[in-house]
Amino acid sequence: MTTLEKNIKAVKKVLSSEDVLVFEFISDGGKKFAAIYADGIADKQLLGELVVKPLRAVKKNDDIGTVRLLLASPEVKDGDKLSDAIKEISDGNGVLFVEDEKKFFIIGLKKPPARAVAEPPTQIAVKGPREGFIEDIKTNLGLIRKRIKSSDLKIKTVKSGERSDTAVALVYLEGVCPAGLPERIEKEIAAEEIDIIPDSSYISSFISSKPRSLFKRCATSEKPDIFCAKVCEGRVGIVVDGSPIALTVPYMLVEDFQTGEDYYSSSYRATTLRILRVLAVFIGMFLPALYVSAQLFKIQLIPYRLLLRISSSVQGLPLSPSIEMFLTLLVLEVLNEASIRMPKYVGLALSVVGALVLGDTAVKAGIISTPAIIIVAFSAICLYTVPDLVETSATLRWIFLIVAGSIGPFGIVLLTAFLICYLVSEQSYGAPLMAPFAPLVKSDLYDSMVKANLYSLENRPASLSVRDKVRLKNEDKR
Image 1: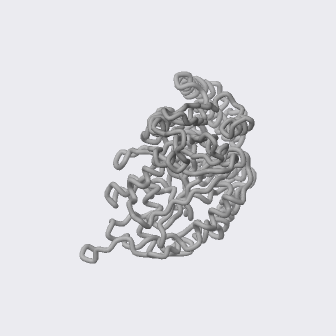
Image 2: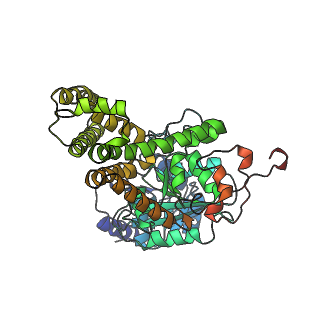
Image 3: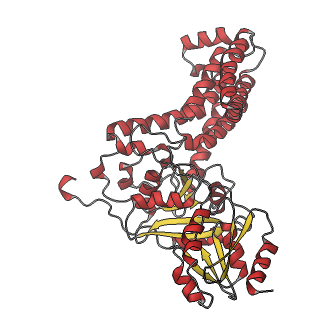
């Protein structure tokens, strides 16, 4: 058995799947070659154009150095371990074995199926760029390189997942991001042993100091412009192969109330919208609980004329206010989950059934009051003004409702105080979660709930402890 046949047999013994193909060919000079690749994620056209065609000129007595010179592919690496060959084939590259040679060549043929770059569904903007990340890491890194052309931009790739061997890229600006932060994140990712990394949310859990916390420790983004802006502020970005959602750390809670569109509109409009988002989240979390606690414990909280309207609506209801609100929220969550999981056209019909049939019938049957439906619906709409906080705020809404039905207004105040104390004491990689309010960082207040004009943001956020603090140098217009 020749060396070429032994190599093919050794690889096929490990990669025995039918989609791992072996293409054997002979040059015009009589030298034998074998290219092994995984069908579906390797580009066969590149194999023919950049490998097979040039090697037709190889003669029988040409050494491996001559073969390497004739390869037209820009991505060629030498290899001598079969374990490396198996790993590269599984990753989508091709491996070229040469007759009578133990060494082989790794050819860059990776071309996994990927969708086109499009506007992300969760971060739609009226103004600004409309490109969004996709599931292919090379495309995502290209979108980042397209925007940041500095030589200080560093991309460090680590592998995670014992079986998936998923590529995770750390993106940062050298000399700007906090010293030692990329190395710390890399070490935390490499330390985890798990079979597969299907999405960036797994990495988010790995690098969180408290993965069971209700509040996240990483910001998420599907838009390259937002991601690049945060990297230029001094954060470290994390891009995971197979996920359209990129991460950035350190994270501050105020980031979720900011959108990319804020920076493409006037500062007055952006400030108004940010304050509106804060109010909407508070209304979404507290309104059902306040309504229940007012009915059960402090009826004086409700204005007199409104109280008369509510009393006429709830008269004769078989359920207590807390049970009524709990069931109404439960129905809303079930309808929301079902509309997301169902096919598109069935989901539309479900929305009509839920809003008109169930809601109207429940009110007419005297099971649920009209104010309860209005409050729950308005609460749900308010929460979605800040999509990145929906999971946290929806969970807190349930907790506040339970506390309000059990203890009343005192319980709401007590739980709010506990949450504030908890958030003030938490941090993400050295940045306080409640910065720039706790601790108070005056220079960062210009881009928090208030959005100042561009010339007032000459320095990077001090809360991030960046090394290069200045980002705008124009003394004349400040």
